[in-house]
Image (cartoon, rainbow, N blue to C red):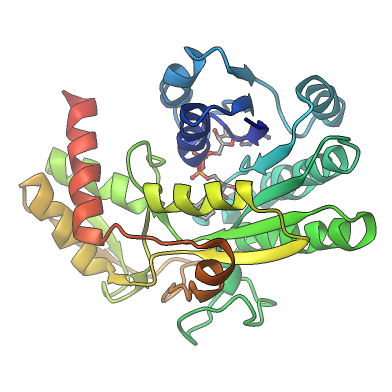
Length: 318
Ligand SMILES: NC(=O)c1ccc[n+]([C@@H]2O[C@H](COP(=O)([O-])OP(=O)(O)OC[C@H]3O[C@@H](n4cnc5c(N)ncnc54)[C@H](O)[C@@H]3O)[C@@H](O)[C@H]2O)c1
């Protein structure tokens, strides 16, 4: 049994993680501001099952408030911290880069400082992103590829996080594992993300905006596979490591839309639009580093994952 603090605990990935840790007998302290980036009622629904559990508590606080972050760490006495709280999303980061900097960089600095002085802490697991690879087309992406050319404010904040964490590992001996998530999907996926948005639009018979020619491709990772990687990172401290967590498979955008339409059982009315600033041509994870050091074994192929997602979506609408 471990005491684990999760920031961003009411979000898509954080709420799944809290439930998985509770199931296996860990004590979980969540921190989340439940902000309105998307409907806070969805976040309330995400945490409702965990809140039933005696071993769970949730602080509804903002990581930008450094005093509060320290108080929570003092109360929680975490052995492992999983830092997921962030402003996510590439396109909105172009509209408000200051907000992204404040939450993702300065807020994360508060988490690093609190970790540094947390006396029982074994290590920090920190959410990075495939977006750090920028416009790189040398696929599959390996962790040792140069990542000095991000193409959105969101991506640059995630790369800054890797650098901030490295400093704390080097100078203060903080043990940190950075996980570069590759487009995660599954039940509770953020409503602004493509798979969730396309499912909603196809089901409602509304046009589906397709940016570009439909050939841009993503490595989509099912939430259960991400949980496999995160749980292994929670259980295995490293001084400083970066891991790609993807499926090591890509799906072109047009194929994705057609696959969702097939599972929803309705046609997709595609509306082709120009590529957007910040969009990358491809993401594709080389996962051999995570396989070797973490024992990471993703196993849910797209067809199966989309079937499960659409089934969940239909359930929530019923
Ligand atoms: N979902 C993906 O495909 C994906 C891909 C790469 C990286 N990531 C990263 O994984 C993490 C989790 O992503 P997600 O998809 O679950 O997003 P999410 O938006 O569902 O979850 C993030 C949570 O953080 C909370 N939060 C945001 N700002 C906060 C603040 N200032 N103080 C306290 N809480 C705050 C939000 O309320 C939200 O509940 C993020 O760091 C994201 O950048 C996600």
